[in-house]
Image (cartoon, rainbow over the protein chains, first blue to last red):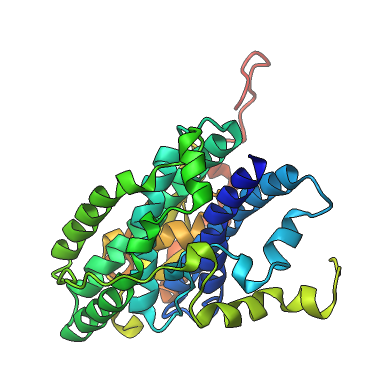
Length: 250
Length: 94
């Protein structure tokens, strides 16, 4: 029983961890000082959320592992994030598109997670949902700006949405552990969030004068640990210190 | 892109009841973006409860070249501070 809860928490936390790491790679490289700080702030919000989840996971695991061990010392297949969040920072439109497609889901998910039977998860969700509402405000605002901007910005934003679209359906994929947690009233039944998700996305894309992608071919795998080629590189960055100097502290 | 964004001045109220104080400046395309940028650049360490932004070009400023005639005459007129009155002991907080 507890194994399912542990897997479920990792499934939530890994999305924030990997997206936080991706955004962190932009630190000092954003297109302007203001957007650079905004992306880094979002990254730090996500890492803060990750800490709450992993502290709880470490408690449930009940062995010697700490939150840091869970974050840093797993193999690639043991990360359960969706493929969307590991996609690279190809350009600012991709960074914003990825953020937007995740934020709409993330906000709806946390809103529901507040009703979880599990007191710790519902408390974490209550705290995080405010942060994520701001993330969504930031990313949807930029989708509209780039969509309504110049012909170049519109084209780049459209390319990003078209390319990332194939990763959206996985947000509503459920693992065995997910289903068990829904059954016990702990987890969120994400299949219920799907139609609202796409209608919110479509509304904002319309406002941004962008086209809604028609492709119905979707990628899955991340939630079962089967990742795209990008995750390995990201993890080698993330885990470098602990792999090179095991057990180092500072 | 950044070259075209105008400069904005940011004023932050750090607590209810206090006045907005000038915190710094930033670049933004419009007022909405200026507010969001100000939130991220200047209030990320819990510095504020309210933000004002104004485009820098809308601020009229005194010319430093005129500092002599504008400010120096006031330097030797300390009596313009209300510090030369004997206050009754019962009056607090003056």
